[in-house]
Length: 167
Image 1: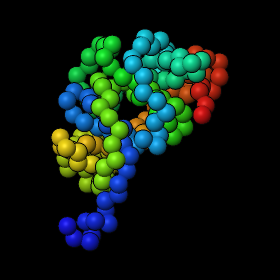
Image 2: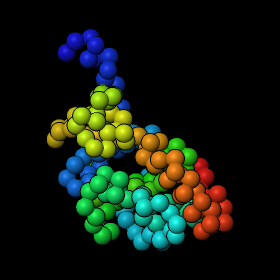
Image 3: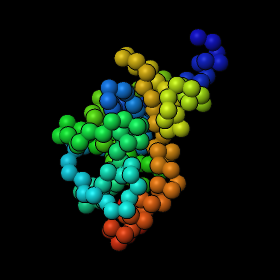
């Protein structure tokens, strides 16, 4: 491997999860906890990516549907699903994923040309290679568009009477 390739790699701690057989990850630094799935409450007037809201020890957290964001076939919630509670950049969110696999420290290559390979490239911040293949690393700060963030804040304000959950 040449010096230019080495400089593009950075070792990072990643929480790896699976969605429809594909491996994805988020940086562990943004993850607060992983929970077994439980019932969510519908949030009226929320953007389509929002599946509902959760009450996690008294804190209201929006539940995001990863399948909708990735354009994958919808599946009903399952008791085997996991919720990844993570910092999106402005608030805590829960990501419903098929299953959390593990926490790993892997070399990550930043991507600038991911659009050549995947349709959700704007959400991908890097690629890691694990023992079982490629892992797409998502930047939660880009997961919700500005209109979705605004609509979510309005729906949470309307529903809970506050500006929504804070960090």
